[in-house]
Length: 326
Image (cartoon, rainbow, N blue to C red; front, side, top):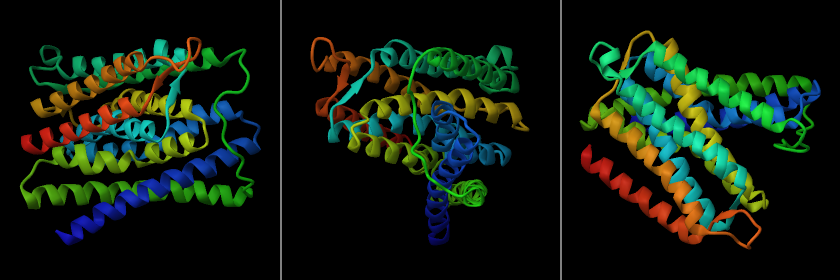
């Protein structure tokens, strides 16, 4: 039990540092070759913060731990909104740009609803609820549409997502990128093995471990990014990063996992409930933005401490529910 806990904690730490090194190293390499900060932000940084979920899911899928793979994504998406945005808005009021409310958040909600529909298309999958290769390709297709939309929406605009220059030497950047990738793979393996062993030794489901310990652990890069952004006054980055990460988790990570998984990813009623609660959290975010109102008549919608308290309280209720459910 102690060995398994050490493996889990060590794996999560490797995932966090691996993602950090990967982003910093790859960003430095990209800037050396004249790739814009916007492209880096939408690709390298977005991938880096979601890389822990991707690695955990791929390993879990190939080892037959479907509950762990689905529980990780759904649990991470719930934690991203209720826990991470909740904590961030407790630290400072978060203004959210109208474009995010009108376009990106509805697309996130669409991705959550689409996941549930694909999980429930049993009549088309031989009577078993789950995700097939075709479902994975559908998710990847919609992710491609989302990325195409992002590229189109940035044309003719100045600025955008930026990445601070690291001034790293090329050799150092290459070593950091390679080291980050190695840490992600090795950390993901430790995380999956540790979480599975703990679940088996305690007689609880892998889905519960995935939706709590693993989900929060793999969401730590988003938490750190959001808090740092809030402290620097770049509060719009907090919501934009969370929304983008959730879309990435569903469309890209689950899409890729289902596509290359050697087996059909069958899901239980527990997995469907988790996906439904994740969709509910997305809708709560949209409602909270309108309930929070505007700072001034002409400003963006906001998330304040009041909404932050509600989000954190809802996350605690969610934790109690899934623990009781087992």
